[in-house]
Image (cartoon, rainbow, N blue to C red):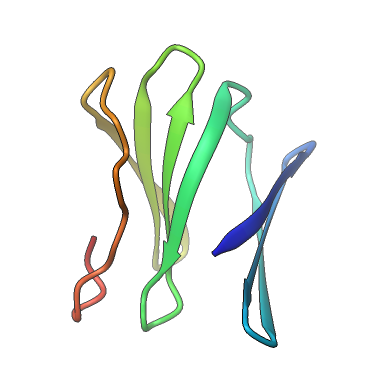
Length: 91
């Protein structure tokens, strides 16, 4: 589970703890100032997947692909019940 999502200028710092292991991802890019909450998962290949809830009740799905972030808009006013990855690492 990710325990930290810190925006510092153009840097995102995401940290995760699983038992004794700790993983941190640092992403560079303009953070979304309107983020209220987020849910994250890491697939078996180590790629980060995020669902971001925004102040205007919108939802974004972001994933790391190659050397860039891909972002998709999800239906407005949706509710995040769970976020899991299948055995292929797909959400």
